[in-house]
Length: 212
Image (cartoon, rainbow, N blue to C red):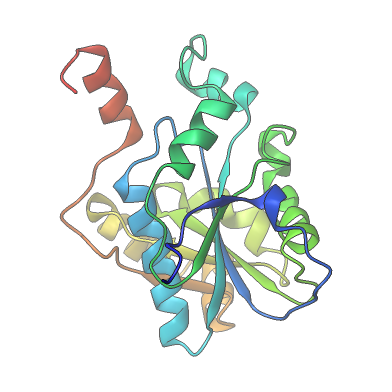
């Protein structure tokens, strides 16, 4: 009987094996995690595969409690770091790609440090020393990638949200975006389900109103 794939903690994947491959990582508050997050990381992996860049692993990296507290402008309430980790672990993984949640660095990293923590943790705990990490960014967060993609070693995939198509189109000639696209360090792709534009904010408001 074939064992059912499941999402695992990155800390459980300690390996001395060194491999080459592509890893897709999505950073976010995940308060709460929803199908749109999975749609984004799956769409990113599909886009890379179509370009002949097979994906070895998918990694969810929750932001720190400090960051989420500032974002929500209120007490954490139920959205503690561990609660968000457990919610991700309870979801269905990609059917063909190993899926993990980073429970080692996200709670330590400050907002501006998170990209470096993601790469270091993946290399250390997945056993990749020559891997390439692609960060997933939503089109509403495009500007946040400037410092990341200004470093020519970094890679990212922008997953379009339906309401941001015109905005992304208007930004394509921005020098750092144009340079990253021309060198295939930045890939833009549609979501798998362009009709699904749900957000964590919408879900939190619905939960607060007892609609879920």
